[in-house]
Every structure is written in structure tokens, then in C-alpha cells.
Image (cartoon, rainbow over all chains, first blue to last red; front, side):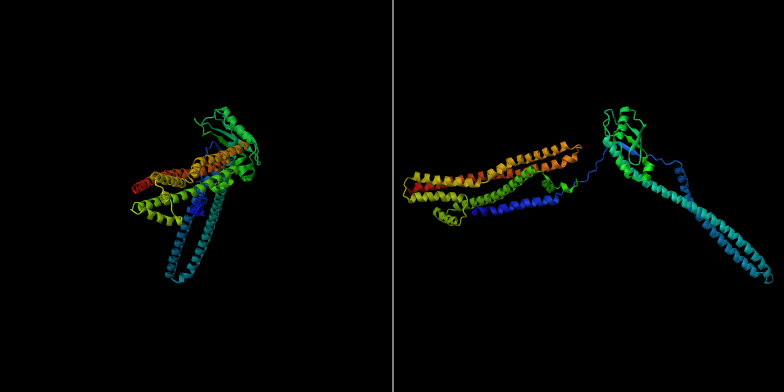
Length: 259
Length: 229
């Protein structure tokens, strides 16, 4: 009994210590390692080749400043119109005042003349307005067209980002299959143009730019041929595929090697 | 591998059976050694306080017979500890021998000293109780932990051999699991080493003081025996 009593306190203290430690470890040490940023050497660089006709681009570039001009022109037109209107009003008032001043006898005659004049003026104004309207409509049409083109460009950009993400996948797959020759050195770079079909199968690999080292070029081509099919390509939307992946350029360069 | 599954409890739970057994043994050893440590701390403190109190009482000029009676009263309550027991053993034997009419002072002294020696040995035993266990934990638990680690790493490399794509991520959890065993081994061993050193030094110090006291006490008895003749 004495021995047991003598040990009660130590046992309690020890168990409490260990339980506390375990609790601390369970709660406080829940290791949340900082998500380390691993910067992998990019030794294959995927670049997208645009197959769009080159003429489309300059046209859009040309029309871009048009949009800016458009608003300025519009404003100018409006200003002119306002000015004309003001002028017209003051003219009419003056003429009315003059007409009142002139004797009533001549009133009818003058009225006739005035009517005629007014009619003529109205006709002229109408014609002018119509012309303006037409011009404005044409401008609007142009503006809309420019807008549409811009929207197209945005869509294009979206396609490009999608393409970029798929390009990264493709690049990864090629890297995994690439065995560099021992003669590979930093600074070497070769580019391949890969032709694919929409199911991801590589139909053709062409050396677009040689690195100067035939073994290196061969290893790059072999890497692509070894992959044979990129399963990711199946998921690419067809518009993006047509635009960016039917012909696809891959750059190979071993940057992680010693000189 | 998400971060949550790398918490230490998950690592322990995910370890293989031998490693888990090793960890269990080590945790048990750690708990037991801490029980011993707390018990020793309490006992040693009590012993050194009792020594101080008794010595001041003893040297206050009190009559030895009276002191003996007082400590008898304490002994009935089972609360005497350490040096008082030595005193009681010596004085009991001394007075008994004298009551029996033994006239040879050397025989009386010898009897008293012997019984004090016995009491001293008992006290030493009490002071050094559990210290061998602490020493064993201190020296062996790192090895046990190491065994667990080696076993765990062995297994994780064997798993690696079957894998075609060997990456660090396939071995790292296994090694991490295995290393927990070494960590627990060290966790058990370090306090045990410190406690063992401290308590054995403390026990030595107390024993020296007990011996000094018993020598002093026997010199008093010796004086009494020879003056009474």
C-alpha cells in the first residue's frame, strides 16, 4: 500500500506529461510545410505557332485607331450641328424682327417670299440631315465591325491561354521521355515542328532549327517519336487545336547542365 | 501527399507493425522512466530535508534517550526516513546490549556499529532504487529506436525496388515514419541519462553524509561506553 501510494503522484505526473506532449504534437505540430516553390529548369520550351493568315492582323491594327477617330469625329460633328442650330435660330429671330419692322402691306408678299425661303431652307436642311444620318450610320457600322474584330481578338487570346496550358502538358510529357546525349551542352537549342492530328497522334516531326549537334537533334526527335501520342490533346477544343496544335513548335535546350 | 497526412500521429499510425511495436516499447519506457524520475525527485528531496532536520535536532544538545523516544513515536507513524533510521538502529542495539549487561565496551560498540552499517546499506539501497532502470533506458532506447528506423527504411527501400518510377515522394513518407522511431528513442533516452547522472550524484552525496553521521554518532556512543565504565 505504501509503495502504491508513493507511486501515485509520479505515475499521474508522468502520464499527464506524455499526454500533454501527444496533444501538443497532434495539434501544434500538424506539419504544414510551406508550399515550396520548385523552379524546375525549363529545358524544353513549348512555343505556339500561329497558323492564321498574317493578313488578318494588320487589318485589325489599322482599324484600331479608327475607333478612336470615330468618337472624336462624332463629337466634332455634334458640335458643328449645335453651332449651326444656334446660328439658324438667331438668324430666324433677326429676320422675324425685321419682318415686323417692315410695313404690314408688304407683309403678305414678303410672307410668300419667306415661306418660299423657309421651304427651301427646310428642304436643304432635310437633305443635309439625311446626308448626316447616312454618314453616321456608316460610321456606326464601321464601329461595330471594329468591335467585333476586337471581340475576336479577345477570343483569340483566350484560345492562346488554353493552348499554353496544354502546351505545358505536352512539354512535360516530352521532357519525361527525353534522354539527352552526353554531348549536350548548355546553350544548345534545337526546334522541332510537330504535326498532330486531333486524337493526339504525332504524324510528323520536322527539325525546324538544328542545334548544330546532330546527336542532340536526334535525341529531341526521338523523344517526340517515343511519346507517339499525347492523350491530353484529345481534350483540347477543336478550334484551339486547329489554331495552335495542328502544327506545333517545340524548343529543346538543356539549361540545367554544366557548361 | 497532402500536408495533413504528414502529421506525426499519422506517421505513427501509418508505420509498419514492427516499427509500431518499437515505438510502443519506447513510449512505455519513456512513461516508466518518467514515473521513476518523479518518484526519485520526491524521495530525494524528502531524504535530504529529513537529514537536515534531524541533524539540526541531533546537534541541538538533546538527550539521546529522549531523541530515541521521539523517533520511536515517529516510527509508529511510519514517517521516518533516512538518517533517523540509522540513528534508531544504532541506538537500539546499543541500549539493548547495555541492558543485557554486556560489560565489554568493544563488543557493545561493535554491535551498534554493525547494526548501523546494516541500516546504512538499506538506506543506500533505497536511495539508489530505480537508478539501474534509468541507466538501462538511457543506454538502450536509442538502439531500439535505431532498430525501428532501420527496419522502416529497409521496408521503404524494398517498396522502392518494386516501383518503376522511383521518386523521392515514394520513399520520403516511409523514411519519415521510420525516423519517428529514432526520435522517440532519443526522447526517452535523454531525460533518463540526465536523471540517472543527477540522481546517482545525489545518492552519493546523501550516502556520504549518512556515513559521516554514523561515524559521528558512533564516536558519541564510544565516548559514552568508555566514560560509563
